[in-house]
Length: 252
Ligand SMILES: Nc1ncnc2c1ncn2[C@@H]1O[C@H](COP(=O)(O)OP(=O)(O)OP(=O)(O)O)[C@@H](O)[C@H]1O
Image (cartoon, rainbow, N blue to C red; front, top):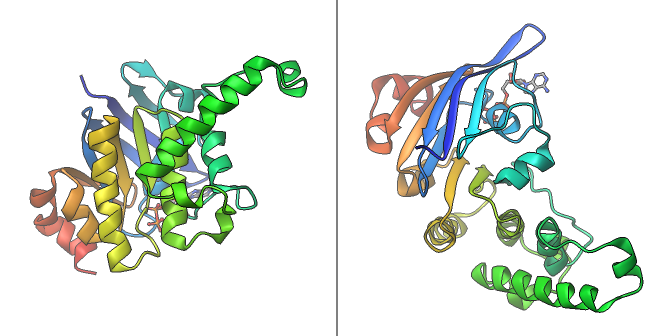
């Protein structure tokens, strides 16, 4: 069974059919790419998968669980975490705290426990600090745990956003243009990081990306969207050599 199964997904904004009859199946452990021209509907697909937009039609199933109609927070608990095209960190909080925010759905204590600093509070805070530091180490950010998030260079902010998403313990990680704004060296490093995350966190990754080096370098399968509809789907090499895809997107 596919980890993510999407059938006949669609949404209209007024008269605009932004996504129409979108379908995809992503197996556990896959690195999967969603590509296509600007305005094709890629981010809108992410927004439907994460409950930001309610689809007009269609089915979204994660591990067999129906997600349509659920709130973003419920979908995150069900196992989907994401990063954004324009980085959304808590910029005035520390690097460590940004990751701890992601951990909060797994570590719960009552307000009273927090206010009175009861032993449970200290135990959980210690566990959260350790877990957050472990994640930061993966992204080589442990040495900057006390920095303000806004003081990190751009490439490291992107990594921190991925670390925070992983802290929510997802089954599926959605990355919206993770290489945007990165220089070629940062992009190569990011590709290694994404592979590392898949291999060591047993993660499934769906990413939107315009950087074809990253797409062809790490994605095993692709879906191409064009004007809200699936133009091509399949193994990366086949899709990138498809004349229709070259005409609509790659030839630009
Ligand atoms: N909330 C909304 N209200 C109205 N139209 C919207 C809304 N969100 C997206 N759209 C429209 O839906 C279409 C698809 O937009 P979307 O952002 O999903 O494209 P994209 O493929 O992610 O593009 P890009 O590569 O530029 O990020 C666009 O025409 C966009 O203007």
